[in-house]
Amino acid sequence: MTLSISITDEDLLTALRGFLLSAFNAEVVQGQVNRVAMPLGNFIEMTPTLSASLSTTRSGWRPDIGAQTFTNPTKWTCQLDFYGADAASNASIFQSIVRTPYACEQLAATGLDFQPLYATEPRNTTLITGEQQYEGRYTVDLVAQFNPVVQTPQDFTQQLAIGLVDVDVTFPPETP
Image (cartoon, rainbow, N blue to C red; front, side, top):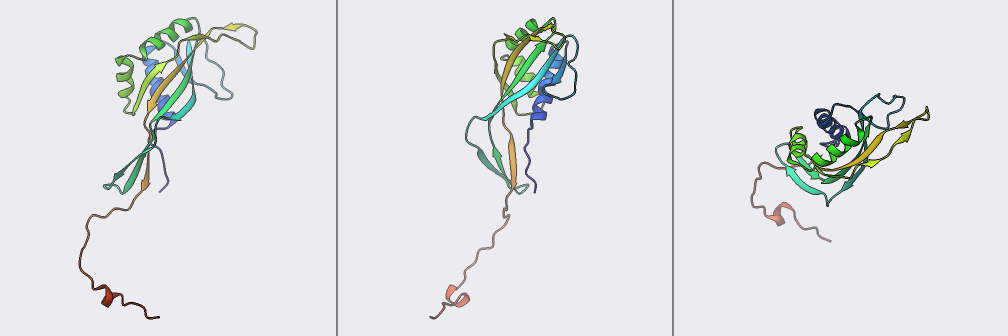
């Protein structure tokens, strides 16, 4: 059995992208992708920056499928860069709504065990383009929690046969 994890970075980015697309009139892209030009106008770039354990891994068992489970509550940080003319207001809107029931319900609807904890204050991170022009950018770090599960094979028994055995007869002692 090859080990796998129940929630991947790709799953988290897909869920976050869906939330951002529903909330903003902007394209949403993943950061740190080679040979891809930046979109024009308003857009949001997502770059995962940290995954850190929040506690000791918890273990459990699934006799129905013959597996032991390990759950590791994890803090996930994703840098969101808001670009374009609406960068400052979009960053402020995101920082304001991420701590609300609205954001929690939207992310819960994805079916992942993934919830926002908080977002940092928007900071002006304007950059200079290759054409030596200022590009408006505001950055917010989203801090969320997800609870990935890893399953490993585990032998279980469904039925035990208990009986008496005369040990000295069945397993006679060795004589020196």
